[in-house]
Length: 145
Image (spheres, one colour):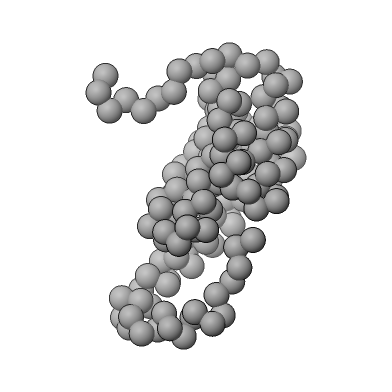
């Protein structure tokens, strides 16, 4: 099928998926978002469980969003955060305990994603109303890493 972006299922043992998740979360905590994305991908492709798969997809999208943030691409950040939110919510809906079994507080993570999306929306509205407002923000820009 043309345009089909689904990845092939490549079974991976639960231990290997857990190891990939831990490595991905470690890379994320170090601010290496690209590496986190790469490390999480085998786990995502390695399970057929919808809740687990959606969790990995959400974390991958979250990491990809921050790669865009580091590169100065707010549109890429927003799109990936929206995608991350959908996948993380799917994981939570499918199995509310799945994320917590890995030490991930999905409701809290979803709240944080919502806060960041709201901030991006507020910034976009500010820029639209007064493009010069960006100059005022430049000196106080938060560091991503």
